Length: 122
Image 1 (spheres, rainbow, N blue to C red):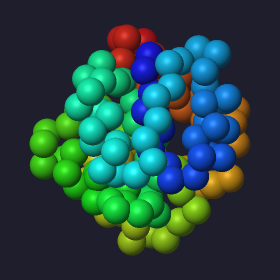
Image 2 (image 1 turned 180 degrees about the horizontal axis):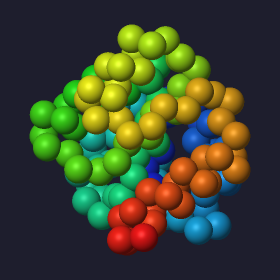
Image 3 (image 1 turned 60 degrees about the vertical axis):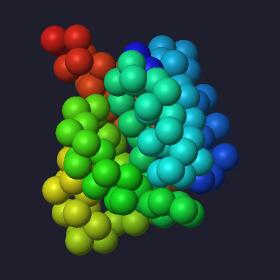
Image 4 (image 1 turned 90 degrees about the horizontal axis):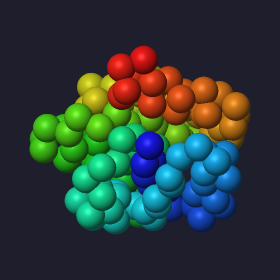
């Protein structure tokens, strides 16, 4: 399964790549603008892990654009933000889960496996 990680922190992208790369192909983007470009270039992407606070285009803005485009790829939000209004906005735009950083790698792998299983009828 191909997973896109959209986060302006190279350290966070590296951590997620390390946590997931044993069983998943991990591709990366530094912000929402780049995230949309990478999704366009990789239409076989099965899951997006999305930060909220990023330059140029934040994660909530990217989610809104994906919703407008009829996106069906599951999006998990990974952020330092835990504000209920942001969580509600992300869920309204289609986010399937909200994880607050620092992310527990075992929990992240479990969630990704669950989405992988759903995608393959499991």
